[in-house]
Length: 197
Image 1 (cartoon, rainbow, N blue to C red):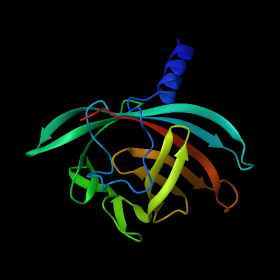
Image 2 (spheres, rainbow, N blue to C red; image 1 turned 120 degrees about the horizontal axis):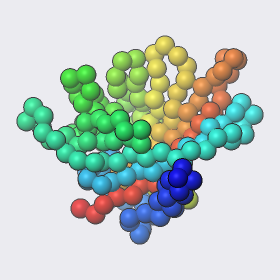
Image 3 (cartoon, rainbow, N blue to C red; image 1 turned 30 degrees about the vertical axis):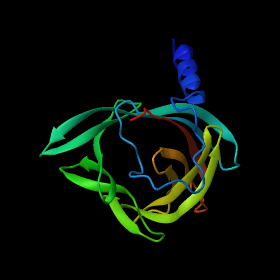
């Protein structure tokens, strides 16, 4: 049964709902960084990498917009991860926010300028590195915003690439183990499977 589940996830990763996944380098400006239509999915192939640069584990994950709800006179979208955890989220004039701990926390500023920094929750913050980075994966070619997520008390960080109107495209996580030297420890390639408006 588990093999069938992984085969179906693999099949979904290699096919998508939209036929044209080529997001040109200079598309018209999109309204949102992450489209929140019910049914939108970002299926990811996650690879764990050892200190020598070898992939030692591959798994599949997914994120889906599963519904909407009203709270405090605002409409939130329900964002569900593959492990069943759900978050309330919405697009605002400032960008994409999660509603957690009784408040809205900006996760991805959009539109943004290179150098913008913002706290996302607790000791985590993001910085906008680029607003025009081209990322090519097996699922398409995308013009992306490049965000770097850091923490105030550790030197680990994550490079995240999101394409306006498509959402999650690619990420790399850097950390250290015994040595203080950082290395690429994991990466995720996403296949955005978006419903038409």
